[in-house]
Amino acid sequence: MIYTLDKIAPKDYEGNIVFLYGDETAERTLPLSKKEAAMVKERREESREFLLVFDRLPYHLYFLSFDSEKPAAEVQEGLRRNAMKLIKRFETDRVSEVAVCGAGTLPEEVAALLEGLSLADYSFDRYKSKDPYHLQKVAVDAAYFKKDELEAMQRLWNRIYWCREWVNLPVQDLNAPAFADELASIAADLDGVKCTVMDKRQIESLRMGGLLAVNRGSVDEPRFVVLEYDGVESGKRKEESGPICLVGKGIMYDTGGLNIKPGDYMQEMKSDMAGAATMASVLFAAADNHLPVHLVALLPLTDSRPGFNAYAADDILTMYDGTTVEVVNTDAEGRLILADAIAYAVKNYNPRVIIDAATLTGAAVRAISTFGIAAMEQNGRKEIEMLKLVGEQVYERLVEFPMWKEYDELIKSDYADLRNSGNTPQAGTITAGKFLAHFAKEVPYVHLDIAGVAYFTKAQHCWRPGASGYGVRLLYAYLQMQ
Ligand code: BES
Ligand code: ZN
Ligand code: ZN
View 1 (cartoon, rainbow, N blue to C red):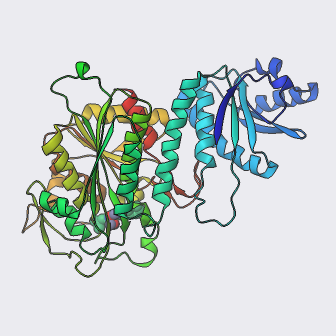
View 2 (view 1 turned 180 degrees about the vertical axis):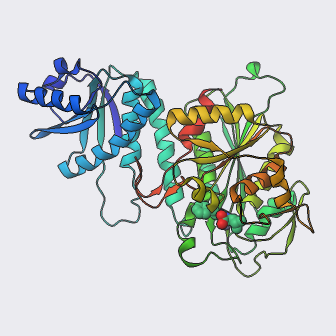
View 3 (view 1 turned 90 degrees about the vertical axis):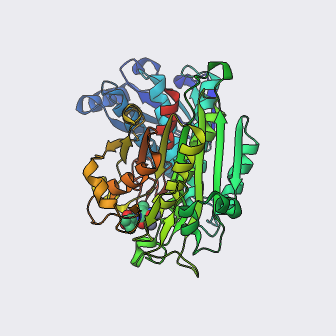
């Protein structure tokens, strides 16, 4: 989709218009007949929220009325969701170019609609023989943004597009080495981003026992990718504060391993690298837009398969930091690769905070469905509060789960320091978070379990079925607040 800025006078504009109607000042700017205006007024009296489409053949006027008096976050999310309705109408009306303008509408409201259009227009098309419908061009009323503001937003949306594309790609076309190559080639073209890709031999010499164990049943090599972006001028840096470390679960495919996923539970497990895709996308977006932050993304990548030499339940692993882990269930593989990455961050980067994103537990989906992120913290009160706050603003929300010390007992092993799955089926999301927190030691740590939101089986809000990119806007907004 191409966005441009344009002076748009709705009365004489020759083309399709999306008109955001925030208040009555619109009546003066709009090309409505008396009857139409009366109809709009009547509708507004019933409810402030509606979409009316006026045929101005060969063009259309999409008249989107919203309630600007609601809380800002709710208004903006409403506009994002309405963008999906609009995209569907555009498709039936065969509209591929629109202009966006409005009255009684704030720039952030227009931005929310544009963001919604970008999210709603996305579909995974690569394997379709025929090109599906897409909105091609959006001209935005220049009254709302400066050129660089619109461009910065677009760069973020473009990163979300690529995040979704990676997550949607099946493992046959995106395995760990291929994903690492892709990340390295993007980093090479981006100012201020360094990329280090460690192969199996290097991972062996680092003794990342978790990542190596999960990889043992696979024919594809693992990779450990470290991306670094430093947008802080050296003079400004406070001595004691290291980077923000972003750790992402990169299970390119989760078969469950020898504890193989039964029935159709395996379906959609190509999305088990969404955490890694999210963190890489956030770092790239921060670099695109020169955010003044210092970031390190740590991405352990492998698929998990029950192949020839696959790791087994009862195996006892020695992790990067020396912690021993009894494997109870090979399907609890994400925490094994993440543990190594978190420990690596602690040992090598003096992080200000470690945040991870992971499609970690089915229990998170059962607890809160597909409407938010299950979040936990250890020494990270300030950070999680900030994330909750921006999460409400961008409507990628967090709900916090407890980290009471009682849960520690559930992941103690009789034969090793920890077990990789709790000794009860209860509180599976929390025991997973507790397991990871062990490796963060004293470093402020926030865990984001995105299992419910990374990939939608059914269309929801402004997303078609498939990868959502959920979390990229959240973390980007968090970085903007630094
Ligand atoms: N990748 C899955 C979690 C998952 C499930 C993500 C459904 C998205 C949708 C994870 O590796 C897993 O299999 N977790 C197990 C843990 C259990 C064996 C302790 C689970 O949630 O059942
Ligand atoms: Zn699993
Ligand atoms: Zn998994």
